[in-house]
Length: 83
Image (cartoon, rainbow, N blue to C red; front, side, top):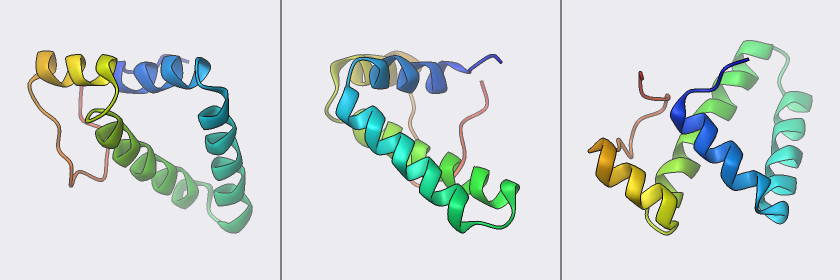
């Protein structure tokens, strides 16, 4: 599986932050346990991950630099940007 640059940045960040990684693992498991439709669960996770990415872009230097370099973030966006 290939990740886009946004997904890869989150993956790299979570690899280095055990507590946040555990939080997201639990969150994903919880969402999938509650949702009947896999597509609905995946869409919800996608939306929440994008909000997380935007939030991290205001406080984590790697995310800040990427946002400056890429030139845009869409805080209200509910889906990953097209790369």
